[in-house]
Image 1 (cartoon, rainbow, N blue to C red):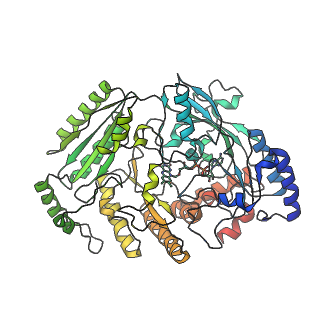
Image 2 (image 1 turned 135 degrees about the vertical axis):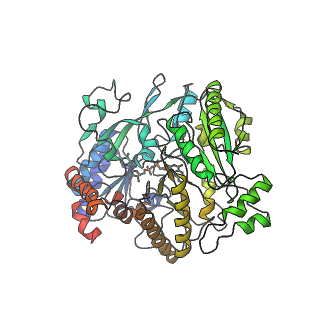
Image 3 (image 1 turned 90 degrees about the horizontal axis):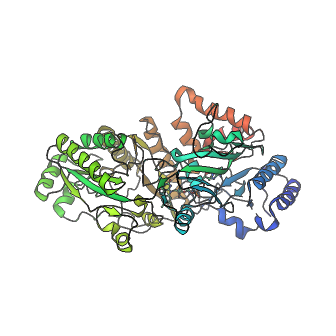
Length: 558
Ligand SMILES: Cc1cc2nc3c(=O)[nH]c(=O)nc-3n(C[C@H](O)[C@H](O)[C@H](O)COP(=O)(O)OP(=O)(O)OC[C@H]3O[C@@H](n4cnc5c(N)ncnc54)[C@H](O)[C@@H]3O)c2cc1C
C-alpha cells in the first residue's frame, strides 16, 4: 500500500484507522484502481518521476468530518490536498501539487443549502456543480440563473477558488470570485471560521453582505493553501428575460483603438453587460475558435503570410477588405435583460459608434426571448457567435478545442492553459500580438494560428486574457520542451507586466516568482508568513501557488 510522503508506515496505519472511524471505511480509498483516478490526465509530467502520485483519498460527507480529517492529518503530519470536484483540467486536474499528498475529496458534500429566490443568492457545498444548480432551479421552478463557465461539470466553489471565469454576465458573474458572498472555512489546524456577517454566528445577513466588521480575509483563501472551504454563498441573477447581440464592423487597422475604448466605456457604464467578443476577419479570425471558417481565398491567404514574426502589412489587407466588404475588426456586444431595455441600450451603443468611428457598419441579430425553444437552442451557433455559456446554459462543448479540429490537427492527450492578462487598450493588444508571435517563433512554439489572428477574451471589465491551450503529449521529451517554452514565454509576459490570471499547478513555483518580483518578492514572503502562522504543521496543499510550508521550503526553493 502506498504511504503519503514523509509519513512512517506505522503512523499511516494509525491514521488510516482514525480516518476510517471518521468517515466510514467505504470512503477511504487506498487501492490503486481508486487512487489512480486522482491522477491529472492532462499532466505535463506524463510518465516522468515528477508526475504527482496520490497514495490515498478520503471523502468526508460533512464539515465536521472535514474537521476530523484535518485534525488527523495534523496529528500524523500527513500532507493533504482538498479538491471540490477535481475537474481543474488544464491547470492540474485533481492531482496535488506536492506528490504523495492524501486527497481530501469533497465531491460527496454536494448539498445546495439555501436558495433565496427574491434576493437571488445561493449557499452551496463544494461538490455542487454548475449542472446541479441549474437542474435545481429548473426542477423547483425557481426563476434564477447564473453565470456559466466551461465545462459545467466543475464546481462553483472550486471555480471560485481558482478565480475562474464564466462567459455570461459581468454583474456578480464572469469573474467567479467577484460573485461570492460568505464562506465557511476549516483552517489547517481543524478550527472552523465563518466570514463576513456569518462570523456573528447568525446567518441572517451571511449571503446578503460580503463584509462584517474588521479585516476582510476572504481573498486569502483563493489561489492559496490557507483553508478548506466547506460552504460558500454566491450572488446570482433573476432568470433571463431577453438577450440581444449585435456587431460593429470597422474598416481600418487603427480603428482597433476606438473600438476597444468604446467597448470598455459601455461595460463600465453597465450599458453593455454581456461578454463582448473582438475579432479580425482580415487577419483570419472571425470570433471564438471553432466558429472560424478558414480563409480559403488564395489572394487573402497570401496577404496573411507572417515573415520573421512581423505583422502582415495592414495596408494591402485593408484594401482587400474594402473590395470584399470585410471588416478589419469587429466587436460583438451582448446585452442581457428585457428586450425593451436592451433595445435602448443597443440604440445608445450604435449611436456612440456611429459618432466616434466613421465608416463603421452594424450587423444586428434578432433578440431572443426566454425560455428558449429547442429550435432557438439548436440555432444558437448558426448566427453571430452566441454559445450556450453566453446564455447561462451548462455544457461540455468546449472540450472540442482539444479535439482534432482545423486549428488542432494533431491533438495531444490534454492541454495546459496559458493565460496572460493584458490591459484592454488597442495599443496593448497590438503589442501583445507582436511580442507573443515573435517569441513563439523564436522559441519554436507550435501555434494553432498566428497570434496576429488572435484577440484577447474580454472576460474582465478592464483587462483581456490572451488564452491559449498548449498540447500535452505522451512524449516526455516533447513535454519537457513545452514546460521550458511555457516558462520562458511566461517570463516574457511578466517582463511586460502581463501577469497570468491563473497557472497550471506544476508550474506554480516559477510563475509565482516571476509574477511577484516587486521589492525582492516581498509578497511571496508575506504569503510564507501567513502560511507558517495559519498552518504550523504545513499539512495543507503544500506548494499550491508557490506557497510551501517551512519544513519543505528550503528543499523546494533551493
Ligand atoms: C476545455 C476546457 C475549458 C475550460 N474552460 C474554463 C472556463 O471557461 N472558465 C474557467 O474558469 N475554467 C475553465 N476550465 C478549467 C476548469 O475546468 C474549471 O475552472 C473547473 O471549474 C475547475 O474544476 P473544479 O471546479 O472541479 O475545481 P477543483 O479541481 O475542485 O478545484 C481547483 C483547485 O482549487 C482548490 N480547491 C478546490 N476546492 C477546494 C476547497 N473546497 N477548499 C480548499 N481548496 C479547494 C484545490 O487546490 C483544487 O485543486 C476549462 C478546462 C477545460 C479542459
